[in-house]
Length: 219
Image (cartoon, rainbow, N blue to C red; front, side):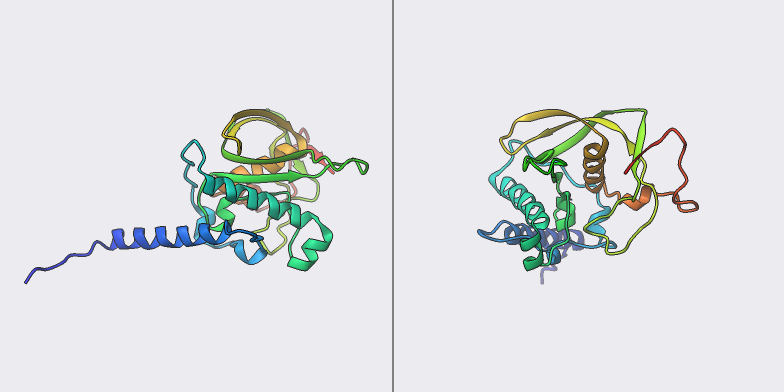
């Protein structure tokens, strides 16, 4: 009789790949809108993983996922659609939040000009990387929130005020971009997700609102 030895690690890896592919196929199906139940929450192990890079050139599957992520942000910022789909408003989302541990993120920062519909930043970023950052630091006066965190976490989240990043866009073009202030904060928040970091990891547990006087606080 031949004894068959099963490698548990290999079985688990194959199961993991099946779950990943099922999740991806679900998210990129035609006419599908990402909803809140697709977003994993605080405590899910994927949120603490370091996401893996996307092989370039970017495949159609991941480009479609990027488009879906951007559409989610657009829907979440539209009062009527957000109410219909029961969405929380967001300016950024990363693939790990959808249980896809890949280095993909989308940002949609609306214009502050009431007379303009042109967003300040609207982009899907594949394999984003921070090339440099300023010594000057900044934070939001009201702290940060997250689509994957259902509780309020008070405290200052201190980040670099200016960053230079590089990434690949949906046209498979290499982009280099400089960001500052709020836009830089949003992008850093999403890149954190790609590295298994949550925004509250940056908060001083003993004194959440303690910061150095030279840190810029944005209203």
